[in-house]
Length: 272
Image (tube, rainbow, N blue to C red; front, side):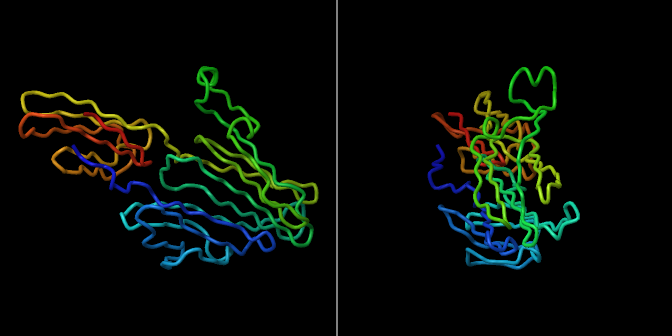
């Protein structure tokens, strides 16, 4: 039987924070409570080894990638756009928390807007799902809108003043998150797509023929990543969204054995 107590299959968590006085002043941090952070790659390719790290959001936008000492990788997008709303002066609109790698956790999504001349009236976040939340929605396939407090869980306003409004929502499921920024009673509308949440454990079926074990590992969304065999061999699938992986191995003697399957979101299951 394989002991999985010392396996670090948890990806590091990348967190961004806005300076509410100057939304272009950004801090990125990486949380990894197991093997620890090895390196953080900025969108410009720079390597960072000490976090938290401060950067100018107008100069570093795109994908931030963190690797821990066990080789687990996570990525997250940071976006800061400058837009003109209603003929006003420039409004900075920042977005952080969009996962680019699979995760089995809720996604903390933050949308902030700042206009130091005209101020920001509000940032409104709401959800549009054609999703698989209820049998009713699966039957009719409708594109529906919901209050995020009911659909997504917690929703909170983090910081608001005359110049800056920052909103945060906890996204529990894949789907579209629509938002609008209001300045001088005019609107800027956009949509954020969340499609990397997988909270469902993979599975494995086993058939023993003589001393040969035939197995099929399966996963419904992110795909099978690793298969841990009882002889110590680890089958690395290599690419995500591989929903079914089959194989076999030969038993060496009688007794109990365990096969462990891990998907790309870090979910684990085992069959003994």
